Image (cartoon, rainbow over all chains, first blue to last red; front, side):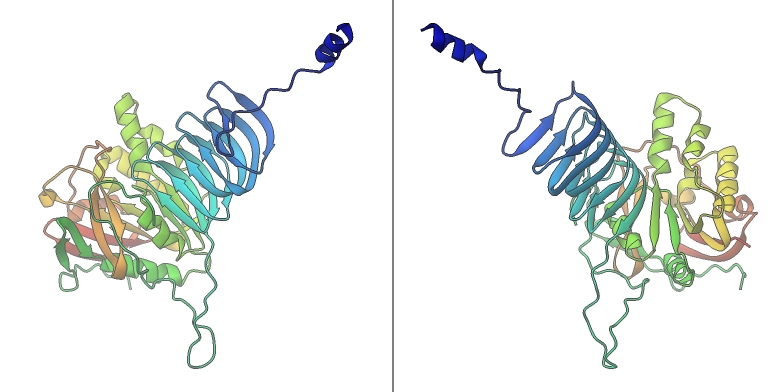
Length: 161
Length: 202
């Protein structure tokens, strides 16, 4: 009996796990972190983070309450809070109307809602040109050629490209 | 060629789906000018919108967006002096080949316009170009709009209801006067009282 009790108390308590819902880690609004964050699941930041964030194949969200100063590498990034730093997204960057962004963005695709504050340097990854002209040389896209894309004419802010 | 000419013939005013739209010949020339620049660095002072970010970012090497409309709106809401917004444009001198001012000048009083023009002159490289739009007396509304660029340089005005900015209508001569440090390159009258200008830095 005594032996059994001793064994039970000898086990260290399990460390608290971060809140993880559907493979998403949440840094709550009372949490402040300085340093490097690396992960293999989606991350939602509602607290304060300073440093670097690397979730290469996943989605980083800076929530409305989030305050982030960081170098960011992620597949997709959504910004609704305050973010100062450089974002390198292999997929898409989405900036919502509540966002306050200051930094550089490198991405393939970007959406920005009307009302978002941006002070940004934006570099879009360009798709390699595949079409070939009759001369056999790849056609160079003239930089002033207008793009063909649907245009939302409504008075409300738009979302998505 | 630095002659200043007003060109009504090539403008095209339409109202698509209730939105004011026109074909921007000034923007077409502006982009052609940028194409000839080796660095192709562009500054857009807003209002930032995704269509424009995509349009310009795919055409220039580096797109800089610094939304002065939202900054100005925040200053007014807080009751802070408007001149605080200028510290946000903290780029090194001669950083850009082109600056899109849209209708920012119409939202500023004269001292701030002067500050803006001086800043633009400092930030533009020699031969660089600034594009200015003024709404004039007959704009009908003081509401701020984003100048959303679409296909074939058609520009749609999209209301920005979150912005509450005063409108100070400026005329042709006011714009020429305020942009005095620059060489006027071209102007277009897109609709009554609605004008686009291109100015070049020597």
